[in-house]
Length: 125
Image 1 (cartoon, helix red, strand yellow):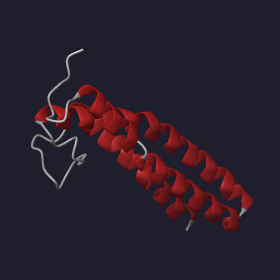
Image 2 (cartoon, helix red, strand yellow; image 1 turned 60 degrees about the horizontal axis):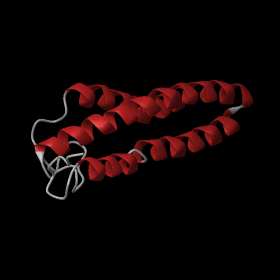
Image 3 (cartoon, helix red, strand yellow; image 1 turned 180 degrees about the vertical axis):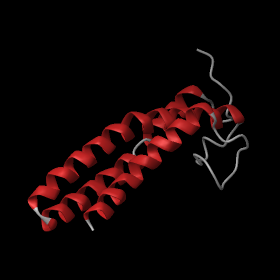
């Protein structure tokens, strides 16, 4: 059961790192509503689509790797404290991981608004 918790604690950070690595170099080619970073601003043009994926990918890599390491360390400490403590630690870490997964939406949207106009064209400085 404890190995299951370790695997569970690795799912969100692994997703962040995997998509961070993929989107950093290869964002989805076509703008679509099924796969990718899908907000109104990111889907205005191909430039906003590529920018949003690369920006979000960098944030996910920047947060995903440390969160993964922290999760493994916390799991190993919780393992020594007993199953009851381990499950509480795992629950808290999963909540923190979900926040870290969603939080990059805010800076990505801010960066899109600063870099592009409402039509999805790059702003001149």
